[in-house]
Image (cartoon, rainbow, N blue to C red; front, side, top):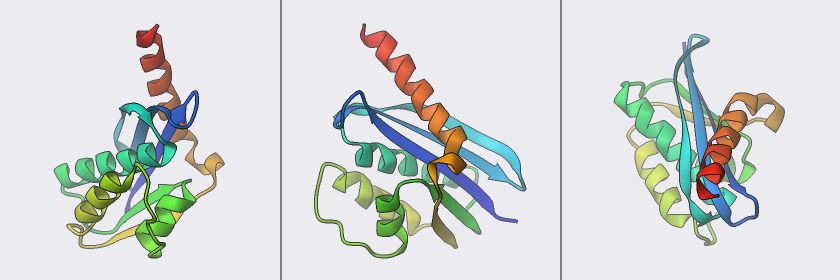
Amino acid sequence: MAVVAFIDGLAQPTNPGIGTYAFVIYRDNEKIAEDCGLAGSNVTNNFAEYYALVMALDKLKSIRALRDVIVRSDSKLLVGQMAQGWKVKGGGYIEKFKEAKDLAGEFVSLRFEWIPREQNAEADLLSRIAYNRHSRKER
């Protein structure tokens, strides 16, 4: 059975802004890992999305889940660039994109799927929790 990672990143209260990330990983419909935290200050939502991907891929590597992995994201840009060869024109997320591409190359089989935000509710909630935690510290 496949391992499925749901990822999300956000930048609040503006874009660029405080970036946070989250991921939730399931194997055989059982949650095996999750994490959320700060992706950076004054970063874009695209940077935060790629940060989430890098963190999820690192976790998948550490638990030796390198085969039959599906990454689901509500970022059309990320999925398009990682799965469909969309052009990367530039922007503050380029280094994270390159890091994600390098990590992805270490997997035996890895797929990317776009999902609507409603189907990414758990990762979305965790990224918002991370933002709320960090924004409270800033006050």
